[in-house]
Amino acid sequence: MKAFSMLLCDASRTMRVEGVRSFVGEDASGSFGIMAGHARFMTCLAFGLARFRQDGGKWRYLAVPGAVLYFVDNCLHLSARRFFLEDDYGRIVSALQDKLLAEEESLRDLKESLKRLETEILKRIWAMEHEGITP
Image (cartoon, rainbow, N blue to C red; front, side, top):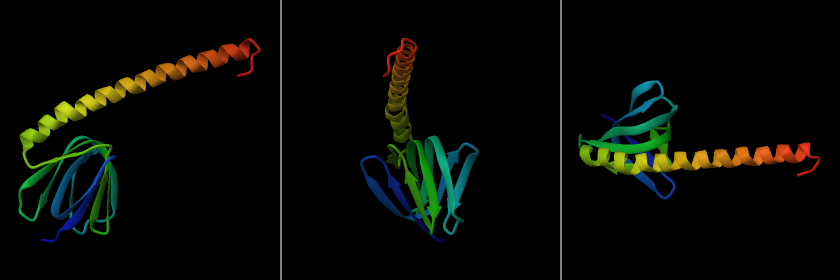
């Protein structure tokens, strides 16, 4: 069986994984699989777990808070804000719950704060324009 390479990139590191036999991930349309020789393919992975097998045959797990996946020239490129790679399913589920979900919650809070700030700034600009003051 043929293999392909996988290049994992996040905000702080890049990791190359060789000898990948198959990859299983999930996007908005559902689960999908990629094997060596697959046609060019691009999608956005959903928040959660993906898995892949290397030459040894054991599943390895990859937790991502969403990612861009691009398969071209027998290389799978995966770019995410952060990823966790683990051989043990229990540990990767724990990392997904503890770390990635907490980060996502913090990011949602930050986005909400920015949204409120933007709304307040727009209100003040509107009020200044109606009072004849040029911002």
